Length: 142
Image 1: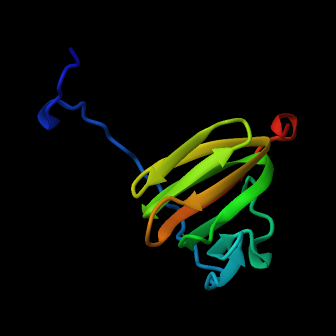
Image 2: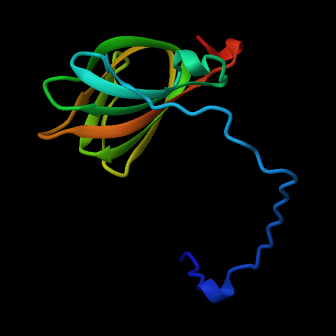
């Protein structure tokens, strides 16, 4: 049996934060909608010309797609994607036989080492989410 801990029994944790000097915002910009995949729209905030050197993060997209639009078969190599669904659902399927659907509140972490896969809306209405692309080190790209 797994023990149940009441909040009054939680260990007391002390966190120390030190801010020597507040940082100023250097530049800000609006992520503009752009077309990706087949009829899908993304708002890319990382991976734009203004932020081209942000390694290990390659891209951060906010996406919105409604069937029949989506992200049909396309290759990936050398990075990981972390997808968080805000609304609706997306079905992921790859050429190695993996398939799954994530829905609002779900998170999917995928390591892409030379695979072809698709991400398509799984039901009626819009599928909205966030997807972060993280660069893999050169020895793990394939």
